[in-house]
Image 1 (cartoon, helix red, strand yellow):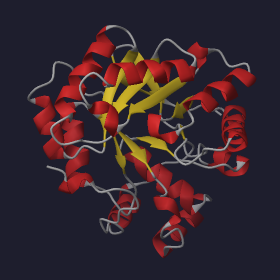
Image 2 (cartoon, rainbow, N blue to C red; image 1 turned 180 degrees about the vertical axis):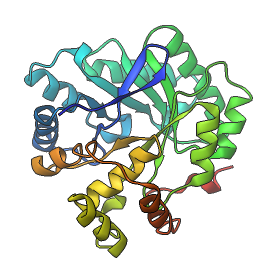
Image 3 (cartoon, rainbow, N blue to C red; image 1 turned 180 degrees about the horizontal axis):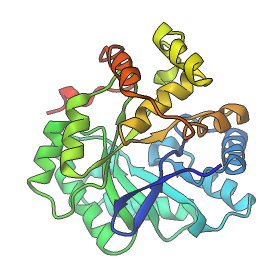
Length: 272
């Protein structure tokens, strides 16, 4: 199954659906998830230092005979490594675990107060040296982005945030669009919250899709990259079967009514 790509930086295109690996820690679970994803057509994998599975992802890709240039790999710098003198060494350890000399996308995992601007400068050095083809941030609010844009040399290619029909963040979506920052949606299925909602079920019936596929398609309609997570092969396949239909204006208006500012993960809005 073919997955569309979005250009996030000059010469850097990212598949619009990737396999999220948060909380996928056991060797057999990583192997099962990555194997199912590769068979389904995924070539985009999202990991992080704190996930504890960078090396396991590398092994799974190696075991399946996948060439490095045929996959898009994202990892993220964890909070403790934002400190001076730690960011770049921690990145080199990530590269060693991933068995590669570069990543396609490197992110700051959270807008750590006082340290985020320094850490961003370190990412800019990594990018300039070729260690990361593109760099970006995660969990940054409009406030954090404005601060960063006032001090950066490289505009973040992406901002990876929790985004789904129950947490639509319209101000953030619009601001990122204005600044040319592509949004990545983690937890796009809200960890299963509200999947039995009548509006979702009506649209699922209309398009002969599942309610999960309607939720994922809503993210696509925002122009976002989508990072669903599953260990089950049938769901891994179902999660990319979202490009043969399009939600119309009436559908989107109905889905807008589901926004309840419901977060299933951490909340960065209180970070100064």
